[in-house]
Length: 260
Length: 260
Image 1 (cartoon, each protein chain N blue to C red):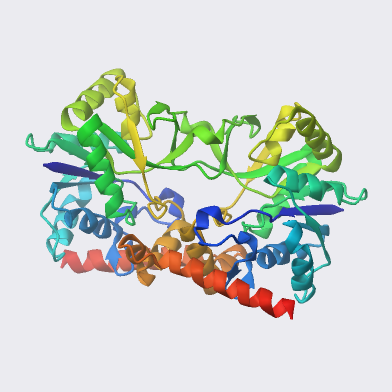
Image 2 (cartoon, each protein chain N blue to C red):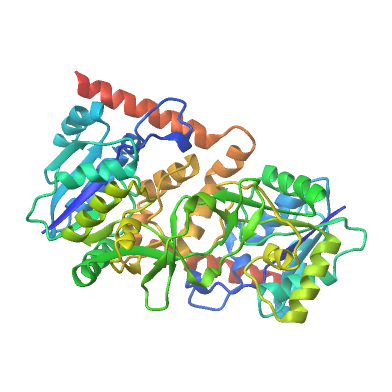
């Protein structure tokens, strides 16, 4: 059985919402972001447990909100901590001992493809630790606190890492206990697992699976969900590929015009 | 005077267009991507020279295409090379000796904000080398050829680098001559400048300024240009900020409902 923890206790600082709000509760195309995310995982047979981690004073609200969502498997709602890592740790305490695998997925990645989730589950079953990623498309630089470039790492070896990150339950438990003991805080769950010397496998992520962080991301996610582009693309209809074909056709017509 | 080189000789490999097409000529919201990009720079008083670098067999077409675009400053169209770096080198040969600064901008970043271009120009005037970037939001990992994680660099020091990258003409010339002499190929222009020991400053980029690489990017750019969201956001109206305010209002209403 697969259990999934959704850290959703983050404040929407970079969204510049003007007020202190829980980003995961912002509405996208008619539904709170957290609901879109939960529904995606809830639709998978392998997923037997959903655990949402929210700020302590929102636990009751979120329970009531989720109880009204049709077709959603039951969700355990637990109180989070001050940092993402502490929230995941609280979620881990609520994981059933019957779970073979534990996945951790950012509530703010509502557009993840079910195929990506499937690859993470399949990988984690074999290696004990699998995370989705895409080859880095941008040049990344190490920049010092004065804003000057220190170095440019070789892009060919860099991957942009996404979630869900999947682990054998025991591996993740051990990694979290070690991190808590040593006061280590990482930016993702895999970094805790790497620390205890367990190998971590990277599987293919998907390009729609971005984290909603900025107002621009929110606009993009809203636009995708409204147009159903992301959903259709993931179901194999590949609306994006159709769009590219349209563009190629349009370009060819324009070039023909110019040839005249 | 500022001269801007636009490498636009790249094939649309990752767009999976099915045919070999020049990505920069794909139409977005009615105009080829390259035209959107050129118009953005053409609107700036400081920019006195525009140089588009395209595949050799498209030079004539592109000249004809651009001649028909209203409100566009004259554009020199030159033939590119097999790699981005060789294309930029060909563009550099066409730069007027009257240019104090040379900017290099990916034709495939049509949504760049004029404010970002302004920060690069201002920075490059002072330091001789300025590039736009945004703090990395994702966890980046170094992954080996077997798909296993090698390390997780500290995200706090990582920046995602964009274009335009701006340089004193002499600095960029020297960097390119040294790279060509040594057979060094980098993923961006600044890496060539770093190699010759010249300091490079990072200025604030913007979140709309992504490179159109995947079908998903193409869909996002099209959607932004059609809704004029990016344009309005950059003109200070901040459509994205309005959207966030709307979402916060919507969420509050939903929470109020649940409180009843």
